[in-house]
Image (cartoon, rainbow, N blue to C red; front, side, top):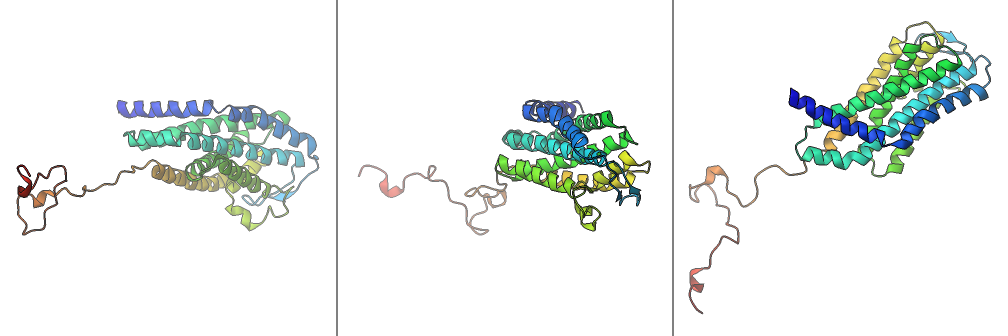
Amino acid sequence: MRRHWLLFVTASRYALTGHARNRFAMLLVVVYIPVWIALAYVTIPDQPAPFRLRATGEILSPPGNHLTQITGALNAVTLIAGFMMFAATFTGGAFDRRLAMAGYPRYHLVLAKLSALTLVCIAVSAYATVVVAVAWPPRQPFLLAAALFCAALTYGALGVVFGSVLRREVEGMFAILMISILDVALQNPLSSSGSDSAVVRFLPTYGAVQASMSAAFSDASAARGLVIQGLWLVGAASAGFLVFRRRTRNALRSGRTRGIPSPRGRGRGTAEGPRAPLPAAESGPSAEHVGPR
């Protein structure tokens, strides 16, 4: 048990060190989240924006700037979590593969990455919730933080998938950026007239958007939205584990080497099958060439 714990702690230290070295991501956490939320509060009109919340069936009419702040917080945490996990997976892929090939258990590596992702998402979601609460108090702040946390975890798992599959760094960054923007923008009633469409139910942060809207502007339970987001999280995490396992698999082929007879054929003559030829280095000179020419 102690050995497993030491392996997990060592892998977790490597994962957290990799995140700490990503200074650009740290800058995004400290600067991008408050700037984005503050700009949404200042520039968007505070006129009521009525819409129907699909998770509860309620008709909510929050101010437009408050509504944009919630979607902006979701966009910010998903981008940051996705960027951080993509960068860690993309740059540390060769190191993880060497560890796995050397015999380091892959389950410990996966659990360490999941633990590091969880800590990052907790910090980012709590920070975004506090920034939103500075402007106005959400109805259910803890549920809002939980919705942001689940959305960040989902995109963090997607970042692992992109970091393991895509070959260039710009491809992964562009994929995460475009998916997050389209995902959240299509569900914002101010920017999309189809936010009430049935198609948005298949977007990655649909459950988190429903839960965060309910937590911010209503006293109704946001459990249904969190459950839906949990399904997306399980799917993304499973895909991330599968691609990580495939990337760190043993590349050596299993099986017997050619030219070496099987144990069953030893000492049984040629009746049960031809013997494998000896290597060239072990075969001596023929009888015709013994002696001087």
